[in-house]
Image (cartoon, rainbow over the protein chains, first blue to last red):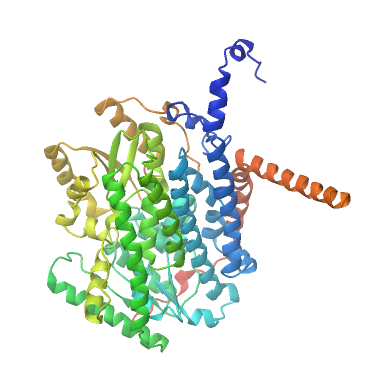
Length: 542
Length: 64
């Protein structure tokens, strides 16, 4: 046991202690790295953020979200169904129980309005996630001894890279559920242990280790028989690249249900391919009519698209505040994950509830000129696709170095509203929207779009680029040299962040931090804001 | 009336104790520690042992 140091006790500044207790320590004195247990990343104790923010975190984030999670489970199918799914599927049991730790990692160090606004984004993602997996279980033949119920006959399965909007015309009677969004994509952010099982599984049947690990993991879910049997047919796409086509072949084999493939053009600027792409969507609608017997509903499509357009218009308002002021109250990871989730999945009531709350907070910040990230040294734009196992790197980077990630490439993808005045224009816009999917528009969608980085840097007033380097993405690997030339020619500070998307074994989180630390000390010659965050071992953490 | 206040006081006391206990769980990350050290290994063991269908035994039919 430690001996009481009387000298230290005598020299203690009681006033400062009281101030730190009441308001929390100022940024430079927090030493957040000392809160972690070695390796596991668990907290010796959670951060003390001052009385007001600690109690906000406890009541309105930690307790509130635990209660709301139970509420969502009750609302979307009940605890028995949830327990059955938990017992059957690894991705549920192993991943979604520690979800509050995902909040902790993303919201570390935040105070005031930024803590509130960012946490609402997380709450929305949790709600949609629970909604999706409960919908899967309601229809799941695996949980019913192979029997197919009414919910099974009213569900539509599709690859996560097929935008949910193409199913809006059937939303009154059918539920669309992406195949991999919950079993794969979200798991990597919440608990990166789970996905490794699926990557290893697909390699165990002979796939080499170097294709995109996203596609490997998506196929691995089927190899391990860890995918619910919830729909009578499926819709696939070649988004983001031909790796998805390969994983679709495995899915087609193992699901063994009628399949509609909806490929989208890689080089989508050519106006001739627009018509082709729109026809693909029309063909899909015919396929759904054949499979379900339910007719296409134009009024429903319009209604849902208009709701989705509302979300896009608010997103533009958010970007305006982020680009032109210091009062944007949403941190980098909340911005990135919420936006990609919302735009890819499509319309859901929780997005609107969340946006209403966030609007209030954002307007307060602008009106009262509240700067939620006052120690910003560099405004960062993150480009290309991010490491899923370390999406909260930007929280760390702000706390440690004052690197404030203002915007990222995935957020800027579906940058459009969709016309709803007549079907022809609507379909053309939907085709365009689909082509602007993550990892397509600005990653493998052509040189011009990859280099939209420069205009977005200017638009968002960023002075630094965090350049993701997905080591197993053959498309992006091909343009590394071009980017390096451009960075030099334009005299832009850019840090290359290597990673293997969901697989933390290739480049660890500690390695990513080391690369950023090296750049900040050697090139930028800056001192860390919180030196305790420079080097710590979180190799076993979620 | 005195009895009513006594019961009310007891309820408040119990609610206060529960609230304080929950705060301790939150502050010392006891939920995280329980899930990391006990629940996840237990569940992982269960999933590892589970009997699973071998999807490779299914014929790949094209043109269905």
